[in-house]
Image (tube, rainbow, N blue to C red):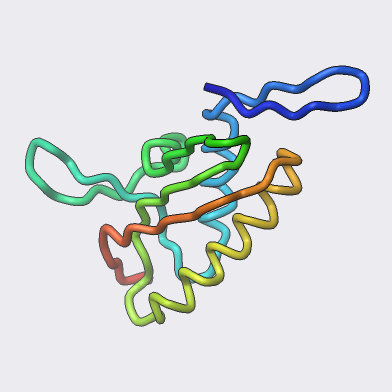
Length: 118
């Protein structure tokens, strides 16, 4: 599935992987976010994903031409989860809407772990 943006001279189709990568890069720029997390089915442990695997911690769907994003994140120890979540939602919503020209409908955040930052 792709996002569609209708313009005067034609239309633009945006692949979900492009939106996922952009949203993931925007998310890890936010204060308090250590990175994207993924729960290993094999051992049940949460793994911190490397920068090139960000899209595994981000799920993007499009319904009624609105982008919905689900983040699986690992946050820094000692920060307010509510504050980090608000910051993440606001930054991602603004930047993804500017990037795609489409509206972000919903952002869900799943905190998969906490890490101490050196």
